Every structure is written in C-alpha cells, then in structure tokens.
Image (tube, rainbow, N blue to C red; front, side):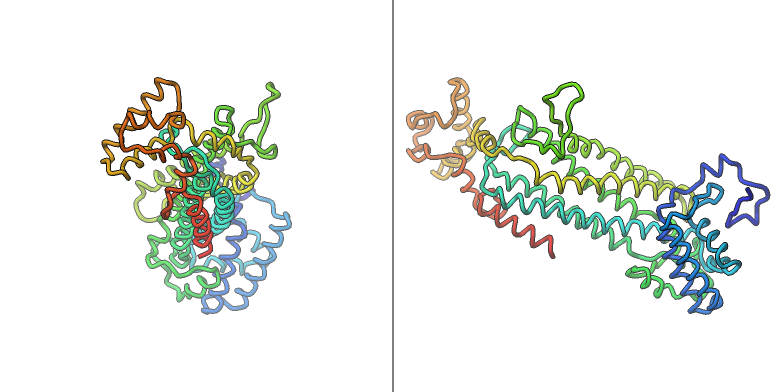
Length: 457
C-alpha cells in the first residue's frame, strides 16, 4: 500500500517498515482533540480570507463527520499513516476531496502537536482537580467524625505522643489540598495556546490567534514561537504534580498496610477493597494500598523520563519530544485511579477505636506531658526532660507504666510533683493542645471545617 505522508515530496520510495513502526506516534487517543483544534483553525482561516470561505465550511463539516465516524467506531487505524494528524486529514480528504489540503495552511505539525499536548494536560489537570476535591472531602468528613478519638502519634515509627485519629487524617487532607492546588497552578501555566507558531518561526499569514484561543478555551496565546513548539516544561510540571500526589497516597497506603496488620490492629479492611490468599484461607490483604504504593515508582519514572528527555535538546523542535504524550498518559493513568479508589476505600475502613485509644496511652506516650507539668511549676525544660527520663528508666526497670506510679514515686524524682500529676491521662494531654493546629478535639473539628472552606474557595 502506498504511504500517505505529509512531507513526502522530498522523498522517493516507501519508508522502511521498521522505521515506520519505530517512529509511529502514540496519539490515537487524541483524535477528538485534533479535530477540535482543526475545526477552530479552519474557521479562522476562512474568516481571515486565507482560504476560501466555502472550503473552510466544507472542512468544518467534513471534520464533524470524521469525528462522528471515530466515535461510532467506524475508523480503522492504519499503520502506514504516521499519526493522528495524518489519519484525520486522510479521512477528511475522502469526504470532501482536494479542499482538505487547505486545512494545513499556516500550520505545522510542531505547533499542532504542542496544541494537542496542552489540551491533553489541561484535561488531565481538570480530572485530577475533581478527583482530589472528592478525596479531600473524605478527609474533612473523617477528620470531623473522629476529632475526639485518641490514637498514638508516631515519630520514627515509635509511639511519641497521643493525637486524635481526626487530627492524623486531616494531615493528609492538607497534603492533598496542596496537591489539588498544584494541579490548578499547572493548568493555568498549561492553558496558553501555541497554535500559530508554525514549525518554529511563526507564520507569514494574517492569523487571528486570539479568536482560536477563545474558541478552544485557552486564556491567551504564546509569546515566543520557539518556546511554544520546543518546550515541554508544563508536561514535567504535570508529572511532578502526579508524583507528589502519588507520594502522598503511598504514605497513607503504607499506614493502611501497617494499621491492618495484627501487630497494630487499628483498622479492619472492608471486603470490597481487599483480596485473599490462594493458599492461606484466613488472609485478608491490603492489596489496594500495596498497589498504590507500588505504582508510585511508575509515576516517578515518567517524571524523570520527561526531564531527561529534554535536558540536552537544542532549540527548537526535536523528535525526542514525541515521547511526551505517552509519559502524560502513563502518569495520569497510574495516579488518578489511585486517588479515586482511596476516596472510595477510606470511608469504608473499620477503625478499631478502643484499640487505638489503648495504644495512645502506652509506651510512655505521656512522658512529654509529665515534663511539661514540671515546666509549668518553674523547672527549666532541660532539667525536666532529665528528670522524666529518669522516671521512664525506673518504670522500665520495674516493668510498669507511668500511670502505675504513686505520688511518692513522683516526688522522689522531684519535689515539685503534686497530687494532680496522678490525673494526667490521654484525654487531658489532648485537651492541653488547644491552639490553632493542635490536636485538641475542638481544634480538630475547627480544622476540618476550615479545610472544607479552603477546598471551596
């Protein structure tokens, strides 16, 4: 079969089959995007008198028919056609004849590809923003619901101080809110139209780029034609946003895996979000969390791929940049489903609150509060720290907890201890942290409300 190439005049004979396969673009999913850009371009060419109005009308009508055929599944993808652009133009020519050849007037595949990339990333940002909004709302709900439910807080995976489950979960809500806002920022920088930049130097035709930008939903047009066709920093930024989001998902995934273990026993996994073992009938595995954790490397890899791809490219366009769309799609398709499944899974977790409450008071987690007690009596913190460290050492030797010490035990360690030290417990430790950002239950409820308000701004 004779090849149909948009650049074939300079060449004789057919392309080697290996070259055709190796250089084929992974852009068939952008069929509708390509037609939308072509329709806007053709209308502008007709309005500006660059091509005859009747040809512009025929092109727009024909493109609508091509899109209908595509959506109905009537378009066969032909390997001998290089990319989505060639497919669209070939199909258009079959419908309207030679007038289809006018569509590429004042346009290069370089600015055409750049346009599709920005439309793709813009759409992916919108999907990410929506998905993260839903996820943050889940954390708002859970944070408010569990604002007063105690659990151990950790540093270095060692029990440190009591917090509330709501406070712990809202920490992730804040992270994912920032992730959502990063996608919003990325969308703003992406939403600049490159069409009209030509291959690299702009166009000699009297294009109305602004009208095309408005029709396609862009906020403005690019200021430099070489930058517009040759840089993919917006794709790297999108993949950074995906990577940061996936990293945060991986952190909470790790906690779900740990909390669901018998050693922690903090959550029960819902059947709809767990799998079993083919050998061990008692097993219920946190496979959703493990897969989200595992896919983080894939998303990171696509970011590094795009950064390395661009690091040595001279201006302007180079074919290396063809690899960008596959990276966007791979990063998007790993990250966004992870966000969506966590928004569904987290509300279904069975939080074992009595176990969490019991663990919150174990492992000398109130030691800092004991030191703070002495500080409030006038003891310098470093001295108080030393005193309480000695108390903990004695408890370890005796095999008891702080709550099992008598007033006499405390007063042997320091005379400033009074009877009220015996009333120190998890609830009083939580209530004491009654300041903005603290883990006091009333502050946690306020933080859940504030996070929801920030989400809606």
